[in-house]
Length: 418
Ligand code: SAJ
Image (tube, rainbow, N blue to C red):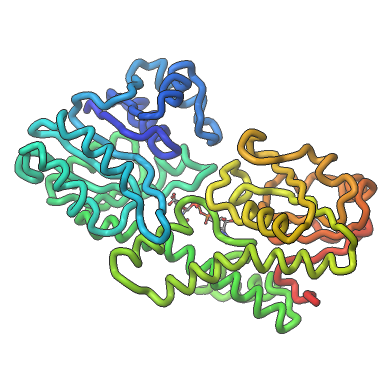
């Protein structure tokens, strides 16, 4: 088994470090954020992911996973640091810093793997030269590969083992050595290719989803024009054996789907389809704001109860959240907004308990499809409200129950917009 030095203990790095160490590898988990390492040493896990705390504590108990503020000499260096968007371009500061911190430790025979999502060409043209500043040559003295993750937040621990993986090497030996490491815990099939292809594959996966969500969102706008319920229409269209239209929503959040199309455009120049996709999805929060304002026309000093500010149901992550954008835009338009979200920590957003959120409100706007919302009794919340409007941008509630409780229900794309 290998000694792996893993840099970046975020929502990918930490589960990966735990999985590697629970399958016999020695892992030194590194994070430059002092509190992260100290909290982890006390068994406090900063990543909100089901079962991750227990798994990390198990990994620490085995002694195979140790934590450090800086990298140490190892057989393998795994770079799992963030690669956020800076405007419409990749911000590679963190990846470059992590790579540079490895250079003094790099030895002949080492394997370096990049997991961070990057524009195609980054491993070869950015990471490789930085590593070769050590005087060692990639391919001759050390191995270099790119291995993207494709786990779904909320299901990471299952998918990190079960999903197939793509590994790109600067040469066949690099890919083979990376495959050997991942085979210690991955049960999915592992496919090898070159670095740039693997980088492009990762971005294709997310851009594909971005385009298809944009298509669903565009259909919701068309349905309003046609007076058709887009959800019925999509459900019927999806009965076709080769059609799988995704779900309209208030916008596309998270720190990947809204980002990866830009990484492709950065590397290849323009893509009319991807730019249109990004513009269309980014316009959704504004469309939801107009929907709320239209429905509340004539209501004096309206108060809107926002249910769900996380970027999607079942998670507590606010990154790129369309719900946050809706709250900001409504507030700018002078609407009183109070948000409730059972998944988001109260120190990360201005949130209220459910009863305070709905008290004297005129409208409930559902922006994230958290399961908990389905078990809230419409009659009990209705009694606390001034007007009983419900706007469901995720089509996730039992609207018959809400109408029975006297609510006027408007679902994004249901064809009833004024
Ligand atoms: N969304 C819709 N309609 C849909 C599906 C999603 O509006 O039909 C919205 C969600 O509400 C959310 C956003 O899109 O705001 C993104 O959610 P998601 O569930 O599509 O994706 P993520 O960001 O949670 O995870 C994605 C996954 N990629 C794909 O499914 C191709 C995951 O496998 C990746 O590992 C992850 O991005 C990543 O980190 O790259």
